[in-house]
Amino acid sequence: MNKSAATIFIRRIRVLTILCVLAALTIVGRLYMLQIVQGHAYAQRANAQFIEPASPLIDRGNIYFTDKNGTHITAATIKEGFSLAVNPTKVKDPEALFAAIQNVVPISHDDFMAKATKPGSSYQVVAQHLDANIGQALEKMQLPGLIVENDRWRLYPGGSLAAQEIGFVAYNGDAQEGRYGLERLYNPLLTKVDSGLYKNFFVELFGSAQSALQGDPQQGDLITTIEPTVQAELERQLAIYDQTWHPKLSGGIIMNPQTGEIMAMAVYPTFDLNAFNAERDASIYANPLVQNVYEVGSIIKPLTMAAGLDSGVITATSTYTDTGCITVDTKKICNFDGKARGVIPMQQILSQSLNVGASYIATQMKPTIMRDYFLNHYGFATTTGIDLPGEVKAITNNLKSSRQVEFDTASFGQGIALTPIETARALSIIANGGHLITPHLVSQVHYDTGITQTLPWNTTPTQVLKPQTALEVSRMLTTVVDLSLANGQDKLDHYSVAAKTGTAQIADPVNGGYYTDKFLHSFFGYFPSYDAKYMIFLFALEPTGAPYASQTLAPPWHSLTQFLINYYNVPPDR
Image (cartoon, rainbow, N blue to C red; front, side, top):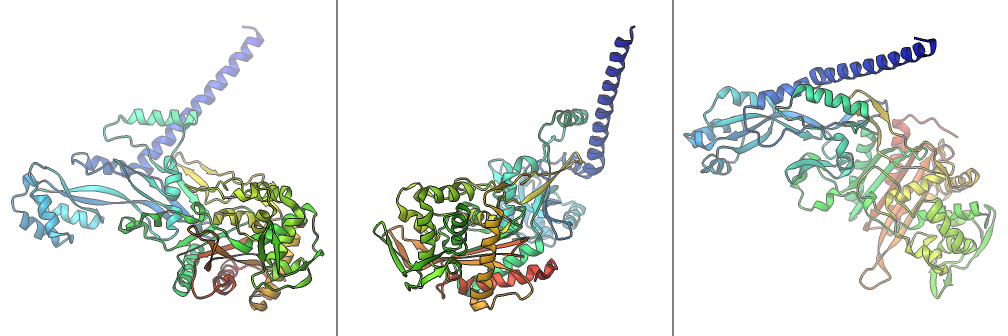
């Protein structure tokens, strides 16, 4: 054998050795998962295989919240216990059997008797999701005709916490699967492959090894960005808001505008994930923050201002003549009070929330520039890509028009309809220095193979505004809080905070135009103003008792801001 052939031979041996080592490591890892990590589950299956099960035992990955210290808190998991069934053919005295069971498990007499005496049946489920101590007590009684079997079910320790975001597991035909929220979107990853009770151990072992080596889809757990304490506080504030202002619906998002990580996301009313089937109206399961669109009103004015500054049609020192009302394409556009302000600077458009001022900026940009900023720079032409199911696109047909009036009304948030998450993402562009990011709820996936993958969100965020534009609008919004919001009463002496309110008329689908007494209130703010780590977005549909968002949403926004400062121990920046 010559030297060249020997070298090739040695290389082949080395490659073969490496492959053998990798295969051995994979097999050892799988053995560890099957015998140690999942050993209890397989023991449960073995114990149950001599009893006809009511349904296949569910096996599913966990979902975790992440607290501020990085600790994972269980949001969704599998609970193990027992279910109870009867074999009517072996029940000799149904009343005596009921009395014996009733002492341990409260059940309906009529329902039990109907099942225990059902002709032609050998299996009827009478109770499910029983704790282990109850099941073990019933097993020890050895009652004729009673079947005690292992059971597993989906448990949500937080109850209603982040219900619309987490979603739940329910039957779809004969199979249990994720229905709404993360449970649905990540269902293929969370669903464990059922190996069956009688599948050959080595078939599963080497099949799993082969899947891992080939890079086939794997199963595992979800690690979310939701901070449970922040989530609970957001939900508490929404509940207080509901009791005070009685809206049809309210919601909020707390997000890191730099990364798109959502710390909290909630709507009110909500529901208990462990008792979802008690709800009469299934629409409560949906998430209006990603699935509904609204005309959000004046919180769009900062985006109009940013587009005007960024495109160069105005500067921060520009002025305009405010006449209180103008007519554009035969349509009258007025300030909220109809009053003229005379010659005023750009700052006052945001400080006093002037529709005529926003219209002025839109007119200076003309349709082509404004269309480009709203649809492309701010992303209103597409969905955000948030990892929740059912996200819908904004309704922006008016921006395809050539009529100037459509752009003037869009400049103050009317005539276009956006999802709350689209709105929050667009506003985060101002807060983060001009980048378009992707809002998201899942940060990592922990696979059953033991590998943890950090999801590549926003690795290269797109720069859609000049940094100096974002900085200038942040300065203007900080002035709004310091001097104008609640006449400066919401100013924080040691923290820079940027914010804007929005009050939008609600369209009348029957008679056309807008209702005069129905509004959507919105509010967004972020801090620290020039290095924002926290953004709060709030909205409420048809609150009663006050016409303006500054009256209804400023208190919960202020409370949440103070909470975040204290909870995260945010250092003062001024």
